[in-house]
Structure formats: structure tokens, C-alpha cells
Length: 460
Ligand code: NAD
Image 1: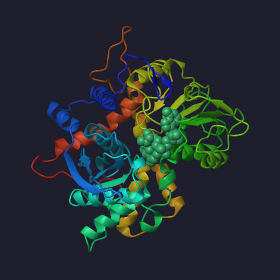
Image 2 (image 1 turned 45 degrees about the vertical axis):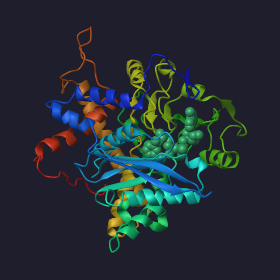
Image 3 (image 1 turned 135 degrees about the vertical axis):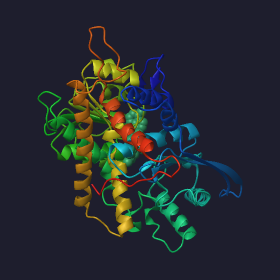
Image 4 (image 1 turned 120 degrees about the vertical axis):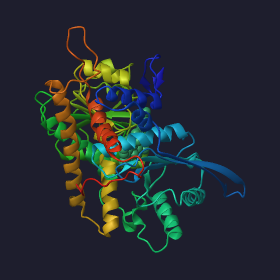
């Protein structure tokens, strides 16, 4: 059996909701004094909104649509997270993604809680006019649920800058007399979008990798310059990561998309690959490259493997064959828990998604700040701030991980190994610990009768 062309092990549970639960449980083992009731609270969303609404389609027929908006937590500030338009959107999926956003925002010290939303619809089969009507009506249904200081949507699967422009406009009509620009991020530049948002996640991956390498965990590889890099997925994250790694002097030896991959030992020029992809709708077939499968790309010998496509790509079926020295998760959930175990045993670190792809929400935060001050920051200013915040997040994870290694911190519930030592947490578990701790401690120190919401962090 395969996962989108990649081998898998039949017995492995690939359900993203249960995977996220396992990862949460692993992190909890290392957090002292967290109370059972609080764990139950953090498992669940704070608020769930389900709406149904009818839309007239272009042919005059009427269809009923269902949409969700979930806020998982808002102890540090308003909810933040995307809105996806997809036929497979479910409340469970949106809920677990909202929780992931809580941890991501906490890890990079953003004054947001986690949120996510979606409308169950097949955007590929809908006209632009129909999508506009759905977006406007969905926004009207959420008119008192979202807001610049309540809950701030962003683009996600099959939603775009255009979708954000429609949401802003609809919300603005319903709330006249206020500066409503910060109600959504990922807007077009002319409507208050930030420079650098498009490349934020991919470039953030590069910054996170750069800092991680500089900490010296990978022998003879302390910088990106000269590193061989493979990238699975050549969409927004993968192509921008390719550009960023290339600028730092890396050799991009392979990239792929859903149709397959290309390999060139001497290195690919990401701008030329983008141009080819724009023309041919795939990277496959570019001149002077060897065509490979996605499964082959994952198992290539290289310094850095960037996963920027879909979930469960490294799993029990192929983790033993990965030859990269470092795996970087640009996508959400591309490595399964069983694969995490195998890679840990094999000494291949995984820079986890909540760190590696946090660049997107970080620049969304900068957009929100710019909108409130009615400012437009220069591109370089955005990137400098992004770099600093990504470096700080990696340092926090690395330092905490090291404290486990040198034994400063003893994990209360860590597995005792047969040879006497204790199992060390991987970087994902450490990142989650760092994210969960401040959220849970803040809940415990706040009086239970007030609405908790405190502001943290500066502009990075
Ligand atoms: P995208 O749709 O722009 O690109 C996805 C790319 O992956 C495309 O090139 C597609 O062809 C390719 N792909 C799809 N299935 C594949 C497969 N089985 N094997 C190889 N390639 C495959 O999406 P994106 O915005 O680049 O997002 C990629 C991932 O990063 C997603 O998991 C997304 O949730 C995550 N992410 C994105 C952002 C962001 O700012 N865009 C932020 C955080 C996380």
C-alpha cells in the first residue's frame, strides 16, 4: 500500500487526529505538575461554530453549504489560523489543526491562540462568482465570531489572497467606522497585505535550518553553503524554500510535485524550475534532469531533506531508508510517530513542523501589526524580523533538548531503557513541551472567573 506514491506499513495508523493525540501525549510525559483537568481542557477546542447557509449557483439551482470555525485556545490573544475550502473538511480535522496552531503560535511567542476554519465545498468545481458568494455569506455568518481582536483568519487549502480580500470587504461593511484591516491576514498588498508573506514559510524553513546547523549537531555540516538539498513539493513552501536555500549557497539536487520529481547532481536553479513549472504545470520533464519518483526523492543521499508537500510522507514503510542527515518539515505532519522513532534511533534529526514552518504565521503576525499601525514595512525589515524569530524558536528548542541530553532535566515519565538510561525526547516532543508549558501555566495562574487573554511579545 502507498501514501500518495510513497510506501507505507499496513499496520501504521495514519489518521492525523490520532497522530496529533500521540504527539501531545508524548510531550505531556515530560511536563511536570500539569493537572489532569487542564489536559482535558487543552485537548478540546474552546469554541466551535458550525454554520449552514444556502447559496444560489450560476445555473440558478440552490445548494446548502456547511462551514466551521474553531478556536482552540485564546489565552495569549485572538485565534489565528486559516480557512480551507475542500470537500473533505471535517470538524475533527479543523479542530486538530486549530490545536496545532495554538502550539505553533506559543512556540514562536506570538500573541495569538490557535484557530482554523473551513467550508465543505469543492472549489475546483465552483466558479469564481460562486466562491465569492460562498465566502461572503460564510463571513456574514461569522460576523461576530471573527474580528481583529477575536479571531483572525488567513488563507489555507484552496483559499487565497482573493478570498481574504472578500472576507475583509464583507466584514468591513458589517462593522463600519473601524480599522478592520487586521481582521484577516494574507491579503493582497494593496489591501494591507505584508511584503514577504508569500515567501515567509519557505524562507522561514531556511532560517530555521540555518540556525539548527549552526548549533553543531550534524558533524562537518554547520552551514547551508555547500549542502546538498532535496525538496519534496514545489508549491508555495517548496519553491520559496528552494530559492532561499539556493541563495545561501546550497545545491538543490532534486525537487518534486504531485506528478513526480527531477534530479540533477550538479544542482538545479530554482527560478528556472519555477519557470518550467509555470509553463508545463509540473517540474517533470525539465531539460538536463533525470526523472525520479517521489519515493526515490525521499530516499536520496543528501544533507537536508525538506518535506513541503503533504502529510505522512516519511512513515514506517520508508523511515529506515532515509539517507538525509537532517529532515526539515515545511509541510504539516509529513513524518509519522513510528518514523520519528526510527529516525531518532538512526540519529537523523527532524526539525518539526511547528518550528520549521512557523514563518508563515509569523509574517501574518507582522501583517496584523502593520495593519493596526497603518504602516507598510519594507521587505528587508520583514525578513530580518522573521529571521530573528525563527532563530529564537530554534534556539529555544535546541537549548531545551540539550538540557535533556546533559541530564539537567529528568523527564518524569520518560521510558527507562534496558541498559539503564532514559529515552530522550526528540525535537518534536521538545518543541511541543516548550509550546504547551506556557499555555498551561498561564491558564493555571489566571483566575478561573475572568476571560483569559493576555498580550505577549513584541514585533520580533
Ligand atoms: P501548495 O499547494 O502550494 O504546494 C504543494 C506542493 O506539493 C505542490 O507542488 C504539489 O504538486 C505537491 N504535492 C502534492 N502531493 C504531493 C505528493 N504526494 N508528493 C510530492 N509532491 C506533492 O501548498 P503549500 O502552501 O506549499 O503547502 C505545502 C504544505 O505546507 C502543506 O502541508 C501546508 O499545510 C503546509 N504549510 C503551508 C504554509 C504556507 O504558508 N503556505 C504554512 C504552514 C504550513
